[in-house]
Length: 588
Image 1 (cartoon, rainbow, N blue to C red):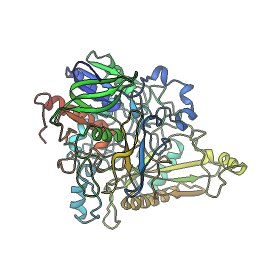
Image 2: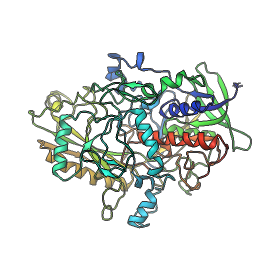
Image 3: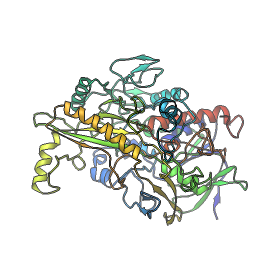
Image 4: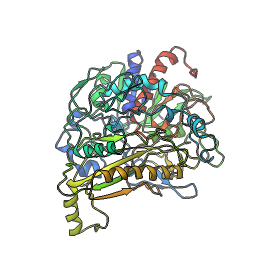
Protein backbone atom coordinates (compact mmCIF):
# COMPACT_ATOMS: atom_id res chain seq x y z
CA UNK A 1 0.00 0.00 0.00
CA UNK A 2 1.29 3.44 -0.93
CA UNK A 3 2.57 5.81 1.73
CA UNK A 4 0.49 8.97 1.54
CA UNK A 5 2.31 12.26 2.13
CA UNK A 6 0.81 15.62 3.12
CA UNK A 7 -0.79 17.56 0.27
CA UNK A 8 1.22 20.23 -1.53
CA UNK A 9 0.01 23.04 -3.76
CA UNK A 10 1.92 21.90 -6.85
CA UNK A 11 3.79 18.80 -7.93
CA UNK A 12 6.23 19.02 -10.87
CA UNK A 13 6.93 15.92 -12.92
CA UNK A 14 10.49 16.44 -14.07
CA UNK A 15 12.96 19.07 -12.83
CA UNK A 16 14.58 20.02 -16.09
CA UNK A 17 14.22 23.24 -18.00
CA UNK A 18 10.42 23.33 -17.87
CA UNK A 19 10.19 22.19 -14.26
CA UNK A 20 12.76 24.73 -13.12
CA UNK A 21 10.92 27.62 -14.78
CA UNK A 22 7.49 26.58 -13.52
CA UNK A 23 8.89 25.87 -10.07
CA UNK A 24 10.47 29.32 -9.89
CA UNK A 25 7.34 31.16 -11.07
CA UNK A 26 4.96 29.27 -8.80
CA UNK A 27 7.09 29.50 -5.66
CA UNK A 28 7.39 33.26 -6.29
CA UNK A 29 3.56 33.30 -6.30
CA UNK A 30 3.66 31.81 -2.79
CA UNK A 31 2.82 28.19 -3.64
CA UNK A 32 4.43 25.14 -2.05
CA UNK A 33 6.00 23.12 -4.86
CA UNK A 34 7.42 19.58 -4.87
CA UNK A 35 9.66 18.66 -7.81
CA UNK A 36 10.02 14.97 -8.68
CA UNK A 37 13.03 13.93 -10.78
CA UNK A 38 13.53 10.32 -11.85
CA UNK A 39 17.31 10.61 -12.12
CA UNK A 40 20.11 11.63 -9.84
CA UNK A 41 21.07 15.13 -8.66
CA UNK A 42 23.71 16.74 -10.87
CA UNK A 43 25.54 20.04 -10.50
CA UNK A 44 28.21 21.90 -12.47
CA UNK A 45 30.56 21.34 -9.52
CA UNK A 46 31.54 18.58 -9.05
CA UNK A 47 29.65 16.54 -11.66
CA UNK A 48 30.56 18.37 -14.90
CA UNK A 49 34.22 19.12 -14.24
CA UNK A 50 37.16 18.18 -16.46
CA UNK A 51 38.98 16.09 -17.27
CA UNK A 52 36.30 13.52 -16.35
CA UNK A 53 33.61 15.37 -18.35
CA UNK A 54 35.75 15.04 -21.52
CA UNK A 55 35.28 11.26 -21.57
CA UNK A 56 33.97 10.70 -25.07
CA UNK A 57 33.50 6.98 -24.56
CA UNK A 58 31.38 7.50 -21.45
CA UNK A 59 29.22 10.41 -22.58
CA UNK A 60 29.04 10.25 -26.39
CA UNK A 61 29.19 6.51 -26.96
CA UNK A 62 27.73 5.03 -23.77
CA UNK A 63 25.32 7.95 -23.21
CA UNK A 64 25.93 8.44 -19.50
CA UNK A 65 23.58 11.43 -19.26
CA UNK A 66 20.73 9.64 -21.06
CA UNK A 67 17.90 7.33 -20.08
CA UNK A 68 18.89 3.87 -18.78
CA UNK A 69 17.37 1.50 -21.34
CA UNK A 70 17.81 -1.50 -19.04
CA UNK A 71 15.01 0.02 -16.95
CA UNK A 72 12.97 2.13 -19.33
CA UNK A 73 12.92 2.55 -23.10
CA UNK A 74 10.59 2.87 -26.10
CA UNK A 75 9.45 0.49 -28.80
CA UNK A 76 9.57 1.47 -32.45
CA UNK A 77 8.18 0.56 -35.85
CA UNK A 78 7.87 2.40 -39.16
CA UNK A 79 4.22 1.48 -39.80
CA UNK A 80 1.17 0.13 -37.96
CA UNK A 81 1.39 -3.08 -39.98
CA UNK A 82 4.76 -3.91 -38.33
CA UNK A 83 5.57 -5.28 -34.88
CA UNK A 84 7.35 -2.73 -32.70
CA UNK A 85 10.52 -3.82 -30.91
CA UNK A 86 12.29 -2.24 -27.93
CA UNK A 87 15.09 0.24 -28.52
CA UNK A 88 17.88 -1.48 -26.59
CA UNK A 89 20.50 1.21 -27.22
CA UNK A 90 19.64 4.89 -27.30
CA UNK A 91 21.13 6.24 -30.52
CA UNK A 92 18.62 7.96 -32.84
CA UNK A 93 17.63 10.56 -30.23
CA UNK A 94 18.90 11.26 -26.72
CA UNK A 95 16.38 11.73 -23.88
CA UNK A 96 18.16 13.06 -20.82
CA UNK A 97 17.74 11.91 -17.26
CA UNK A 98 18.81 13.40 -13.96
CA UNK A 99 18.43 16.88 -12.53
CA UNK A 100 18.34 19.43 -15.36
CA UNK A 101 17.11 16.88 -17.90
CA UNK A 102 18.01 17.17 -21.57
CA UNK A 103 18.94 20.84 -21.16
CA UNK A 104 22.15 19.65 -19.49
CA UNK A 105 23.45 17.98 -22.66
CA UNK A 106 21.85 20.17 -25.35
CA UNK A 107 24.07 22.11 -27.76
CA UNK A 108 22.67 25.60 -27.16
CA UNK A 109 21.06 26.45 -30.53
CA UNK A 110 18.30 28.90 -29.62
CA UNK A 111 15.70 29.87 -32.22
CA UNK A 112 12.31 31.57 -32.36
CA UNK A 113 9.64 30.05 -34.60
CA UNK A 114 7.84 32.11 -37.28
CA UNK A 115 4.23 33.22 -37.05
CA UNK A 116 3.51 30.99 -40.06
CA UNK A 117 4.68 28.03 -37.96
CA UNK A 118 2.07 28.76 -35.28
CA UNK A 119 -0.63 29.30 -37.93
CA UNK A 120 0.49 26.60 -40.34
CA UNK A 121 -2.98 25.40 -41.39
CA UNK A 122 -4.47 28.89 -41.68
CA UNK A 123 -1.40 30.30 -43.40
CA UNK A 124 -1.18 27.45 -45.93
CA UNK A 125 -4.88 27.73 -46.72
CA UNK A 126 -4.56 31.48 -47.28
CA UNK A 127 -1.45 31.32 -49.47
CA UNK A 128 -1.75 27.98 -51.31
CA UNK A 129 -5.36 26.86 -50.97
CA UNK A 130 -7.05 24.20 -48.85
CA UNK A 131 -6.19 21.32 -51.17
CA UNK A 132 -2.46 22.01 -51.48
CA UNK A 133 -1.50 18.80 -49.65
CA UNK A 134 -3.38 15.51 -49.31
CA UNK A 135 -5.77 14.55 -46.53
CA UNK A 136 -3.16 12.34 -44.85
CA UNK A 137 -1.44 15.47 -43.49
CA UNK A 138 -2.80 16.66 -40.13
CA UNK A 139 -0.86 19.88 -39.57
CA UNK A 140 -2.86 22.49 -37.66
CA UNK A 141 -2.75 25.83 -35.85
CA UNK A 142 -1.38 26.05 -32.32
CA UNK A 143 -3.97 28.40 -30.83
CA UNK A 144 -1.25 30.98 -30.16
CA UNK A 145 0.55 33.43 -32.42
CA UNK A 146 4.08 34.75 -32.54
CA UNK A 147 2.80 38.05 -31.14
CA UNK A 148 1.37 36.17 -28.14
CA UNK A 149 4.71 34.51 -27.40
CA UNK A 150 7.16 37.30 -28.25
CA UNK A 151 7.36 38.68 -24.68
CA UNK A 152 7.96 35.15 -23.37
CA UNK A 153 10.63 34.43 -25.98
CA UNK A 154 12.31 37.63 -24.84
CA UNK A 155 12.13 36.66 -21.19
CA UNK A 156 13.49 33.18 -21.83
CA UNK A 157 16.37 34.46 -23.96
CA UNK A 158 17.37 36.92 -21.24
CA UNK A 159 17.27 34.10 -18.71
CA UNK A 160 19.71 32.15 -20.89
CA UNK A 161 21.81 35.13 -21.96
CA UNK A 162 21.60 34.08 -25.63
CA UNK A 163 24.45 35.30 -27.85
CA UNK A 164 23.29 36.57 -31.23
CA UNK A 165 22.54 39.53 -33.47
CA UNK A 166 19.00 40.73 -34.12
CA UNK A 167 17.94 41.17 -37.71
CA UNK A 168 14.48 42.62 -37.10
CA UNK A 169 14.01 45.07 -34.23
CA UNK A 170 10.39 46.20 -34.11
CA UNK A 171 10.12 45.85 -37.87
CA UNK A 172 13.41 47.57 -38.67
CA UNK A 173 15.76 45.26 -40.57
CA UNK A 174 19.32 45.13 -39.20
CA UNK A 175 22.07 44.11 -41.67
CA UNK A 176 24.22 41.24 -40.42
CA UNK A 177 21.40 39.73 -38.36
CA UNK A 178 18.59 37.45 -39.46
CA UNK A 179 16.60 39.92 -41.55
CA UNK A 180 14.01 37.19 -42.24
CA UNK A 181 13.10 36.63 -38.58
CA UNK A 182 9.91 37.91 -36.96
CA UNK A 183 10.19 41.29 -35.21
CA UNK A 184 11.69 41.22 -31.72
CA UNK A 185 11.30 43.83 -29.01
CA UNK A 186 15.04 44.11 -28.24
CA UNK A 187 18.39 42.68 -29.26
CA UNK A 188 19.93 39.52 -27.84
CA UNK A 189 21.38 39.95 -24.34
CA UNK A 190 24.94 39.19 -25.52
CA UNK A 191 26.68 39.60 -28.91
CA UNK A 192 27.33 36.65 -31.27
CA UNK A 193 30.09 34.15 -30.70
CA UNK A 194 33.26 34.40 -32.76
CA UNK A 195 32.93 33.06 -36.29
CA UNK A 196 34.94 29.89 -37.06
CA UNK A 197 36.92 29.72 -40.28
CA UNK A 198 34.61 27.22 -41.97
CA UNK A 199 31.65 29.46 -41.15
CA UNK A 200 33.43 32.44 -42.68
CA UNK A 201 33.86 30.46 -45.91
CA UNK A 202 30.15 29.62 -45.81
CA UNK A 203 29.18 33.26 -45.21
CA UNK A 204 31.14 34.52 -48.19
CA UNK A 205 29.75 31.80 -50.44
CA UNK A 206 26.15 32.39 -49.31
CA UNK A 207 26.45 36.15 -49.79
CA UNK A 208 27.82 35.55 -53.26
CA UNK A 209 24.70 33.58 -54.14
CA UNK A 210 22.40 36.33 -52.88
CA UNK A 211 21.42 34.81 -49.55
CA UNK A 212 21.36 36.45 -46.11
CA UNK A 213 23.88 34.80 -43.73
CA UNK A 214 24.01 35.66 -40.04
CA UNK A 215 25.53 34.24 -36.83
CA UNK A 216 23.86 31.25 -35.19
CA UNK A 217 21.97 32.31 -32.01
CA UNK A 218 23.79 30.49 -29.23
CA UNK A 219 23.33 29.71 -25.56
CA UNK A 220 27.07 29.09 -25.37
CA UNK A 221 27.94 32.58 -24.26
CA UNK A 222 30.22 35.02 -26.05
CA UNK A 223 31.05 36.95 -22.87
CA UNK A 224 30.24 36.94 -19.13
CA UNK A 225 26.59 37.69 -18.35
CA UNK A 226 24.42 37.99 -15.24
CA UNK A 227 20.79 37.10 -15.88
CA UNK A 228 17.64 38.52 -14.20
CA UNK A 229 17.78 35.71 -11.61
CA UNK A 230 21.22 36.93 -10.54
CA UNK A 231 23.08 33.96 -12.03
CA UNK A 232 26.40 34.69 -13.75
CA UNK A 233 27.57 32.77 -16.80
CA UNK A 234 31.06 32.81 -18.27
CA UNK A 235 32.56 32.96 -21.76
CA UNK A 236 32.53 29.78 -23.85
CA UNK A 237 36.00 28.23 -24.25
CA UNK A 238 35.22 26.40 -27.55
CA UNK A 239 36.29 23.12 -25.94
CA UNK A 240 34.30 20.93 -28.36
CA UNK A 241 32.58 19.00 -25.54
CA UNK A 242 29.10 20.51 -25.55
CA UNK A 243 26.29 18.44 -27.04
CA UNK A 244 25.99 15.21 -24.96
CA UNK A 245 28.04 16.83 -22.16
CA UNK A 246 27.54 19.09 -19.17
CA UNK A 247 29.48 22.36 -19.30
CA UNK A 248 32.34 22.68 -16.85
CA UNK A 249 32.91 26.38 -17.51
CA UNK A 250 29.45 27.77 -16.53
CA UNK A 251 29.34 28.95 -20.16
CA UNK A 252 26.36 26.95 -21.48
CA UNK A 253 22.87 27.92 -20.37
CA UNK A 254 21.28 25.02 -18.51
CA UNK A 255 19.02 24.79 -15.45
CA UNK A 256 22.15 24.36 -13.31
CA UNK A 257 23.60 27.67 -14.51
CA UNK A 258 20.58 29.94 -15.03
CA UNK A 259 17.83 29.11 -12.51
CA UNK A 260 18.20 25.97 -10.37
CA UNK A 261 20.53 27.52 -7.75
CA UNK A 262 17.87 30.14 -6.99
CA UNK A 263 14.99 27.65 -7.00
CA UNK A 264 16.75 25.19 -4.70
CA UNK A 265 17.24 27.92 -2.08
CA UNK A 266 13.54 28.77 -2.02
CA UNK A 267 11.81 27.48 1.12
CA UNK A 268 8.65 26.86 -0.89
CA UNK A 269 10.42 24.33 -3.11
CA UNK A 270 11.25 20.70 -2.30
CA UNK A 271 13.38 18.58 -4.65
CA UNK A 272 13.13 14.79 -4.62
CA UNK A 273 15.38 12.77 -6.92
CA UNK A 274 15.30 9.06 -7.86
CA UNK A 275 11.49 9.26 -8.06
CA UNK A 276 9.89 7.23 -10.86
CA UNK A 277 6.39 8.65 -11.34
CA UNK A 278 3.88 5.94 -12.24
CA UNK A 279 0.76 7.99 -12.92
CA UNK A 280 -1.20 11.11 -12.24
CA UNK A 281 -4.02 10.15 -9.88
CA UNK A 282 -7.59 11.22 -10.67
CA UNK A 283 -10.71 11.47 -8.52
CA UNK A 284 -13.75 9.27 -9.06
CA UNK A 285 -15.06 11.58 -11.79
CA UNK A 286 -11.83 11.36 -13.77
CA UNK A 287 -12.00 15.13 -14.21
CA UNK A 288 -9.74 16.27 -11.38
CA UNK A 289 -6.17 15.29 -10.53
CA UNK A 290 -5.54 14.53 -6.88
CA UNK A 291 -1.74 14.16 -7.11
CA UNK A 292 0.70 11.52 -8.31
CA UNK A 293 2.06 8.11 -7.34
CA UNK A 294 5.78 7.40 -7.62
CA UNK A 295 8.36 4.79 -6.66
CA UNK A 296 11.23 6.17 -4.60
CA UNK A 297 14.89 5.09 -4.49
CA UNK A 298 14.07 2.42 -1.88
CA UNK A 299 11.40 0.87 -4.06
CA UNK A 300 8.59 2.23 -1.91
CA UNK A 301 5.32 3.36 -3.47
CA UNK A 302 4.58 6.96 -2.48
CA UNK A 303 1.46 9.01 -3.06
CA UNK A 304 2.01 12.77 -3.26
CA UNK A 305 -1.34 14.62 -3.15
CA UNK A 306 -1.37 18.00 -4.92
CA UNK A 307 -3.85 20.63 -5.99
CA UNK A 308 -2.04 21.26 -9.29
CA UNK A 309 0.04 18.90 -11.45
CA UNK A 310 2.62 20.12 -13.97
CA UNK A 311 3.82 17.47 -16.45
CA UNK A 312 7.19 18.69 -17.73
CA UNK A 313 9.00 15.54 -18.83
CA UNK A 314 10.85 14.79 -22.07
CA UNK A 315 8.36 15.09 -24.95
CA UNK A 316 7.83 11.35 -25.44
CA UNK A 317 7.45 10.82 -21.69
CA UNK A 318 4.79 13.54 -21.44
CA UNK A 319 2.67 11.53 -23.87
CA UNK A 320 3.27 8.27 -22.01
CA UNK A 321 2.36 9.85 -18.66
CA UNK A 322 -1.01 11.02 -19.95
CA UNK A 323 -1.72 7.62 -21.50
CA UNK A 324 -0.77 5.81 -18.28
CA UNK A 325 -2.93 8.23 -16.29
CA UNK A 326 -5.93 7.94 -18.64
CA UNK A 327 -6.03 11.70 -19.22
CA UNK A 328 -7.55 12.38 -22.64
CA UNK A 329 -8.71 9.93 -25.29
CA UNK A 330 -5.90 7.91 -26.93
CA UNK A 331 -5.47 8.50 -30.63
CA UNK A 332 -6.64 5.82 -33.08
CA UNK A 333 -5.09 6.21 -36.57
CA UNK A 334 -7.67 3.91 -38.16
CA UNK A 335 -10.67 6.02 -37.21
CA UNK A 336 -8.85 9.30 -36.70
CA UNK A 337 -10.54 9.68 -33.32
CA UNK A 338 -8.76 10.54 -30.09
CA UNK A 339 -5.99 13.01 -29.36
CA UNK A 340 -3.30 11.69 -26.99
CA UNK A 341 -0.45 10.42 -29.17
CA UNK A 342 -1.76 12.26 -32.24
CA UNK A 343 0.51 14.38 -34.47
CA UNK A 344 3.86 12.90 -33.50
CA UNK A 345 6.58 14.55 -35.59
CA UNK A 346 10.34 14.81 -35.62
CA UNK A 347 13.06 16.93 -37.30
CA UNK A 348 14.10 16.30 -40.90
CA UNK A 349 17.85 16.82 -41.04
CA UNK A 350 20.46 16.27 -43.73
CA UNK A 351 24.00 17.40 -44.49
CA UNK A 352 26.67 18.23 -47.03
CA UNK A 353 30.34 17.40 -46.51
CA UNK A 354 32.85 19.76 -48.10
CA UNK A 355 36.31 18.21 -48.50
CA UNK A 356 39.03 20.84 -48.96
CA UNK A 357 42.65 20.63 -50.00
CA UNK A 358 45.10 20.27 -47.12
CA UNK A 359 46.02 23.96 -47.25
CA UNK A 360 42.55 24.81 -45.84
CA UNK A 361 42.49 24.17 -42.07
CA UNK A 362 38.99 24.02 -40.57
CA UNK A 363 40.07 23.27 -36.95
CA UNK A 364 36.85 21.40 -36.02
CA UNK A 365 38.06 20.81 -32.46
CA UNK A 366 37.71 24.54 -31.68
CA UNK A 367 33.91 24.59 -31.55
CA UNK A 368 30.98 25.11 -29.24
CA UNK A 369 27.61 23.42 -29.54
CA UNK A 370 26.04 26.34 -31.39
CA UNK A 371 28.68 28.46 -33.12
CA UNK A 372 28.42 28.96 -36.83
CA UNK A 373 26.89 30.93 -39.66
CA UNK A 374 23.51 30.13 -41.23
CA UNK A 375 20.89 31.32 -43.70
CA UNK A 376 17.11 31.38 -43.16
CA UNK A 377 16.14 31.96 -46.81
CA UNK A 378 14.54 28.49 -46.93
CA UNK A 379 13.02 28.43 -43.44
CA UNK A 380 9.29 27.95 -42.90
CA UNK A 381 7.40 29.93 -45.58
CA UNK A 382 10.22 32.42 -46.34
CA UNK A 383 10.09 31.13 -49.95
CA UNK A 384 7.28 30.30 -52.34
CA UNK A 385 6.16 26.66 -52.16
CA UNK A 386 3.42 26.88 -54.79
CA UNK A 387 5.24 24.87 -57.48
CA UNK A 388 7.33 22.71 -55.13
CA UNK A 389 4.69 20.27 -53.85
CA UNK A 390 5.66 20.47 -50.19
CA UNK A 391 5.36 22.68 -47.12
CA UNK A 392 8.02 23.56 -44.57
CA UNK A 393 11.70 24.23 -44.98
CA UNK A 394 15.11 24.27 -43.35
CA UNK A 395 17.86 26.54 -42.22
CA UNK A 396 21.24 25.85 -43.78
CA UNK A 397 24.51 26.56 -42.07
CA UNK A 398 28.07 25.69 -41.28
CA UNK A 399 27.35 24.78 -37.65
CA UNK A 400 29.90 22.13 -36.67
CA UNK A 401 29.49 21.42 -32.98
CA UNK A 402 32.69 19.43 -32.49
CA UNK A 403 35.67 17.54 -33.88
CA UNK A 404 35.88 14.87 -31.19
CA UNK A 405 38.24 12.02 -32.19
CA UNK A 406 35.85 9.07 -31.77
CA UNK A 407 32.78 10.64 -33.37
CA UNK A 408 34.25 12.85 -36.10
CA UNK A 409 36.15 11.13 -38.86
CA UNK A 410 34.80 12.24 -42.26
CA UNK A 411 36.14 10.43 -45.30
CA UNK A 412 35.29 10.81 -49.01
CA UNK A 413 33.00 8.29 -50.76
CA UNK A 414 34.79 5.13 -51.85
CA UNK A 415 37.01 4.99 -48.76
CA UNK A 416 37.19 1.50 -47.19
CA UNK A 417 35.19 1.19 -43.97
CA UNK A 418 38.24 0.02 -41.99
CA UNK A 419 41.94 -0.74 -42.29
CA UNK A 420 45.04 1.25 -43.21
CA UNK A 421 43.45 3.10 -46.14
CA UNK A 422 40.58 4.24 -43.92
CA UNK A 423 43.08 5.49 -41.32
CA UNK A 424 45.00 7.43 -43.93
CA UNK A 425 41.78 9.01 -45.21
CA UNK A 426 40.77 10.06 -41.68
CA UNK A 427 44.15 11.71 -41.11
CA UNK A 428 43.96 13.42 -44.49
CA UNK A 429 40.36 14.66 -44.08
CA UNK A 430 39.95 15.44 -40.37
CA UNK A 431 41.22 19.04 -40.35
CA UNK A 432 40.19 19.83 -43.92
CA UNK A 433 36.47 19.00 -43.96
CA UNK A 434 33.53 21.31 -43.33
CA UNK A 435 30.01 19.99 -42.68
CA UNK A 436 26.92 21.96 -43.68
CA UNK A 437 23.82 21.28 -41.63
CA UNK A 438 20.33 21.32 -43.18
CA UNK A 439 17.89 21.44 -40.27
CA UNK A 440 14.34 20.96 -41.52
CA UNK A 441 10.75 20.91 -40.41
CA UNK A 442 8.55 17.85 -39.87
CA UNK A 443 4.91 17.80 -40.86
CA UNK A 444 2.35 15.58 -39.16
CA UNK A 445 0.44 12.74 -40.80
CA UNK A 446 -2.36 10.44 -39.81
CA UNK A 447 0.00 7.43 -39.76
CA UNK A 448 2.66 8.81 -37.39
CA UNK A 449 1.63 8.54 -33.74
CA UNK A 450 2.43 7.35 -30.20
CA UNK A 451 0.60 4.83 -28.03
CA UNK A 452 1.24 2.28 -25.27
CA UNK A 453 2.91 -0.95 -26.36
CA UNK A 454 0.69 -4.00 -25.71
CA UNK A 455 3.64 -6.33 -25.10
CA UNK A 456 6.67 -4.67 -23.53
CA UNK A 457 6.93 -3.14 -20.04
CA UNK A 458 9.49 -1.21 -18.03
CA UNK A 459 11.24 -2.24 -14.81
CA UNK A 460 8.21 -1.13 -12.77
CA UNK A 461 5.70 -3.13 -14.84
CA UNK A 462 4.34 -0.19 -16.84
CA UNK A 463 3.73 -0.44 -20.63
CA UNK A 464 6.43 1.17 -22.75
CA UNK A 465 5.60 3.94 -25.18
CA UNK A 466 5.32 2.69 -28.76
CA UNK A 467 6.51 4.95 -31.58
CA UNK A 468 5.14 4.58 -35.11
CA UNK A 469 6.98 6.86 -37.52
CA UNK A 470 8.21 7.22 -41.07
CA UNK A 471 9.41 10.34 -42.86
CA UNK A 472 6.42 11.76 -44.79
CA UNK A 473 6.76 12.24 -48.53
CA UNK A 474 6.38 15.98 -47.94
CA UNK A 475 9.50 16.03 -45.76
CA UNK A 476 11.55 13.90 -48.14
CA UNK A 477 10.79 16.39 -50.94
CA UNK A 478 11.64 19.31 -48.65
CA UNK A 479 14.95 17.73 -47.67
CA UNK A 480 15.93 17.10 -51.30
CA UNK A 481 15.16 20.70 -52.26
CA UNK A 482 16.99 22.30 -49.32
CA UNK A 483 19.96 19.93 -49.59
CA UNK A 484 20.33 20.98 -53.24
CA UNK A 485 20.47 24.63 -52.13
CA UNK A 486 23.11 23.75 -49.53
CA UNK A 487 25.09 21.88 -52.18
CA UNK A 488 25.21 25.04 -54.31
CA UNK A 489 26.67 26.95 -51.36
CA UNK A 490 29.14 24.13 -50.63
CA UNK A 491 30.44 24.24 -54.20
CA UNK A 492 30.85 28.02 -53.94
CA UNK A 493 32.97 27.52 -50.82
CA UNK A 494 35.71 26.10 -53.02
CA UNK A 495 35.97 22.56 -51.74
CA UNK A 496 37.84 19.83 -53.58
CA UNK A 497 34.84 17.49 -53.30
CA UNK A 498 31.23 18.09 -52.23
CA UNK A 499 29.12 15.20 -50.93
CA UNK A 500 25.41 15.85 -50.22
CA UNK A 501 23.30 13.48 -48.10
CA UNK A 502 19.59 14.36 -48.37
CA UNK A 503 17.21 12.62 -45.96
CA UNK A 504 16.08 9.22 -47.19
CA UNK A 505 13.66 6.58 -45.98
CA UNK A 506 13.36 4.52 -43.89
CA UNK A 507 13.71 6.31 -40.59
CA UNK A 508 15.88 4.32 -38.19
CA UNK A 509 16.56 4.66 -34.47
CA UNK A 510 20.09 3.26 -34.91
CA UNK A 511 21.57 6.48 -36.34
CA UNK A 512 21.54 9.80 -34.50
CA UNK A 513 19.57 12.47 -36.31
CA UNK A 514 17.97 14.76 -33.73
CA UNK A 515 16.55 14.75 -30.19
CA UNK A 516 13.72 17.01 -31.36
CA UNK A 517 10.82 14.61 -30.82
CA UNK A 518 7.59 16.61 -30.85
CA UNK A 519 3.82 16.18 -30.69
CA UNK A 520 1.50 13.76 -28.96
CA UNK A 521 0.00 16.19 -26.42
CA UNK A 522 -0.69 18.96 -28.91
CA UNK A 523 -2.19 22.32 -28.04
CA UNK A 524 -4.92 24.09 -29.98
CA UNK A 525 -8.36 25.68 -29.91
CA UNK A 526 -10.31 22.59 -31.04
CA UNK A 527 -10.49 19.87 -28.39
CA UNK A 528 -11.33 17.24 -31.03
CA UNK A 529 -7.81 17.64 -32.47
CA UNK A 530 -5.82 18.74 -29.41
CA UNK A 531 -5.01 17.50 -25.92
CA UNK A 532 -4.44 20.94 -24.42
CA UNK A 533 -5.92 24.39 -24.78
CA UNK A 534 -3.81 27.38 -25.82
CA UNK A 535 -2.49 27.78 -22.27
CA UNK A 536 -1.12 24.19 -22.20
CA UNK A 537 -3.94 23.12 -19.86
CA UNK A 538 -5.63 19.72 -20.25
CA UNK A 539 -9.08 19.99 -21.78
CA UNK A 540 -10.23 16.99 -19.70
CA UNK A 541 -8.48 17.54 -16.35
CA UNK A 542 -8.08 21.31 -15.82
CA UNK A 543 -5.68 21.11 -12.88
CA UNK A 544 -3.14 19.36 -15.11
CA UNK A 545 -0.82 21.43 -17.31
CA UNK A 546 1.60 19.85 -19.80
CA UNK A 547 4.65 21.79 -21.00
CA UNK A 548 7.22 20.73 -23.59
CA UNK A 549 7.82 19.94 -27.24
CA UNK A 550 5.06 17.32 -27.04
CA UNK A 551 2.68 20.31 -27.32
CA UNK A 552 3.81 21.14 -30.89
CA UNK A 553 1.10 20.25 -33.48
CA UNK A 554 3.98 19.83 -35.99
CA UNK A 555 7.65 20.80 -35.92
CA UNK A 556 9.18 23.88 -37.51
CA UNK A 557 12.51 24.38 -39.27
CA UNK A 558 14.21 25.59 -36.12
CA UNK A 559 15.33 23.82 -32.93
CA UNK A 560 12.51 23.62 -30.36
CA UNK A 561 14.18 24.78 -27.10
CA UNK A 562 13.44 28.51 -27.37
CA UNK A 563 9.77 27.77 -28.05
CA UNK A 564 9.60 25.26 -25.18
CA UNK A 565 10.99 27.94 -22.85
CA UNK A 566 8.58 30.58 -24.14
CA UNK A 567 5.65 28.19 -23.64
CA UNK A 568 6.82 27.51 -20.08
CA UNK A 569 6.70 31.21 -19.22
CA UNK A 570 3.43 31.62 -21.16
CA UNK A 571 1.75 28.82 -19.20
CA UNK A 572 3.21 29.98 -15.88
CA UNK A 573 1.83 33.47 -16.49
CA UNK A 574 -1.63 32.02 -17.23
CA UNK A 575 -1.52 29.89 -14.07
CA UNK A 576 -0.48 32.75 -11.80
CA UNK A 577 -2.69 35.48 -13.29
CA UNK A 578 -5.76 33.43 -14.21
CA UNK A 579 -5.91 29.89 -12.87
CA UNK A 580 -4.98 30.63 -9.23
CA UNK A 581 -7.65 33.30 -9.04
CA UNK A 582 -10.33 30.98 -10.40
CA UNK A 583 -9.24 27.32 -10.66
CA UNK A 584 -10.83 25.59 -13.63
CA UNK A 585 -10.73 25.72 -17.43
CA UNK A 586 -9.05 28.89 -18.65
CA UNK A 587 -10.88 31.11 -21.10
CA UNK A 588 -9.44 30.67 -24.58
